[in-house]
Amino acid sequence: MAQYPDVTQIVGSQMMADDGTILERSVSGKARLRSYFNNVELTAQIAHECDGPEKDAIWAHYLAHRGIAFQFLYHGDGQLYNVMYLAPPERIPTSGTDRWRVNTQFLVES
Image (cartoon, rainbow, N blue to C red; front, side, top):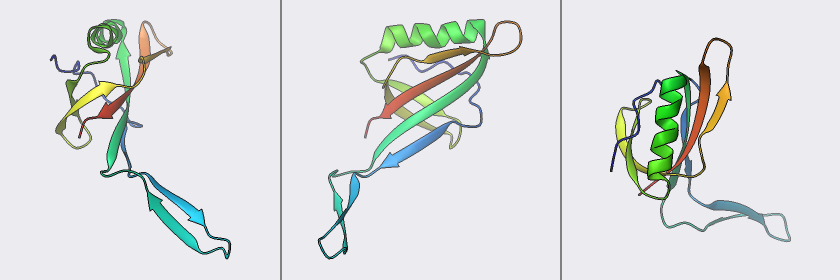
């Protein structure tokens, strides 16, 4: 299990929690909350501003680790999480020579 490449995480990176709570309304309009999860589930959206070799390192990591868990250090709180990819990393060219914005999405294992 190789750790995710240590590439700068920029503003916009975030951990999101979902507890499966849904608001329903009765016929009278009274609010009812229903929760369909036993635990709080975390997902992460991580944004990187990087150069070509860093982008290639993230892409190579994705190809080697899609469908399996690996360790990820979230710089926002300094914690190490076990995560899995939710989708291939988005690789978006930005201004400058060989500069990229890479967005990754993870499911955090509980």
